[in-house]
Length: 185
Image 1 (cartoon, rainbow, N blue to C red):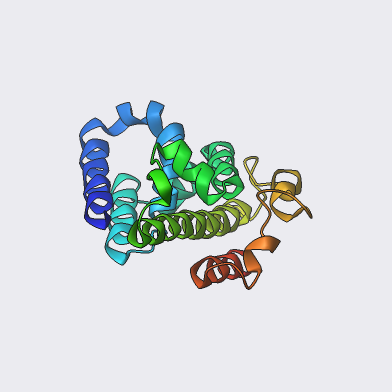
Image 2 (cartoon, rainbow, N blue to C red; image 1 turned 135 degrees about the vertical axis):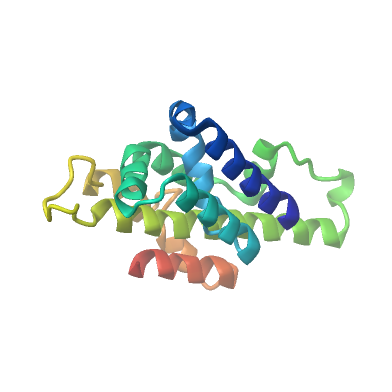
């Protein structure tokens, strides 16, 4: 599976390089998933995603502009990812649980996939907040800055996409680490 995700990032890079400005109309729908891929738990996948992004948007200012332009779409995807339970994520992906619960390897694979999605989403959220709240080159807050109201669902007690439950000891270490990194980024 990591090789498929890595190959997808390489294809995305080729597509963006080929389409160039024509890709702009697809950016808002593609970037949220691309952002999550930049924080994939497999280093080769994450590196391929980062390489594709920096090749498509060579300057820091352009990359910041993409984050700000797509922040609403990113928050929607990240919120949706964090709201999922293991079962609902796999239902949405169309991955059915084998009758009778399946074998142990299948269950571990499902748990790993769920943890990867949560960890990538938490790290992506931290990066989105970091980039979108950083001052622009003119040291003035950007019109596209991320506001407190947009982040409330992630910090509200009892919220299904909240960060606090991700710090619980019952969460996989990968998810707990990503939640901490999200908070300190």
